[in-house]
Length: 466
Image (cartoon, rainbow, N blue to C red; front, side, top):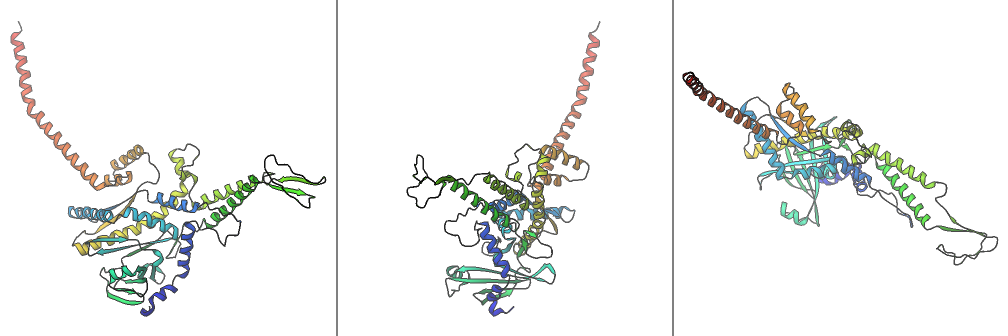
């Protein structure tokens, strides 16, 4: 890359992708009509696309937790794994990641791509996690292996005040364009095409995670959820606007005069009297005659169904089942949505695990921690409401059969702190065993005394008998 014109080169790179991002954002925010609006034209927008995006994201992020499992079966390894899990939880709370993840997922569903940046805040002495705008992210990968990203550029804008505060440099204009260029070995920082910092990468790796919403095979950049519904959404807007115009005109009918050369004071209002020549005819134009409105309504219902089908969000996902459904029947009804969420979660598993590894690596580097070799796992809560009693009974059988561990059973049921809950269970079990042991000892100590009392009373009864 020519270091003297990095910003101009980035401006020429990925132009189609960046333009498509802008179109998708406009569409999501309701700017869905093309061309200039003609005078007197009615343009209605019923933004189902935004509703679909928000709905699928809510189902996707319905509940998530992270588990760290020890790589070795030893007490020390398990202790390190618990410390790593606690450290991740603290970082998540400090960065308010529940909200950041939800916002990032909405962006990802709209544009088809998202990114996270995991760095060390030297002033605050903690891990900082942000979600850069993917419109400013550029990536380079090795040949046909899209999993091996070797360079990433992050471009963003700073005001003159921010530039002076962060970099002690005043830009020429009101804003400065900043470019961060990362490789595994080096970090370079540009301000308006001027190289202001160059140093070895302090992290030993690129601190970015880029992941797609849904991946198209053999492609690095992802697919937006809006792509499939845009045409149907535009046609729905047009059909609804046309029907609205027809109903508006029918409510304000048009007077039709035949064989009349001139007309004055012809107004459609209650009690109006029209004076017309003898051979003339006058009537009101009935736009609703012949069931025309029904055809429009049927077409709109067809578009409505198409929107739900191609977005994989059945009407039942919005609470409109219109009939009572059992748990299994509801799951079958929502199966398209469940399959779509599962496809997304497969991609998110890799992204969140990569983010967690970066967090633990930074904590080890800057805080002197040692978490050992652990397995990271993402635990998702069930998408649909569960019959808890049935689920518990199934997990009980699996645990007793040795198929599931108690911790795995707690994960499946949705216990957030499975490790802490298991620890409390062990403490309770130990306390109960100790209590039972003490009670048994007391019974053993008191048993001979009671035996002697029974023998003495029996002897007394023999003496007193005649």
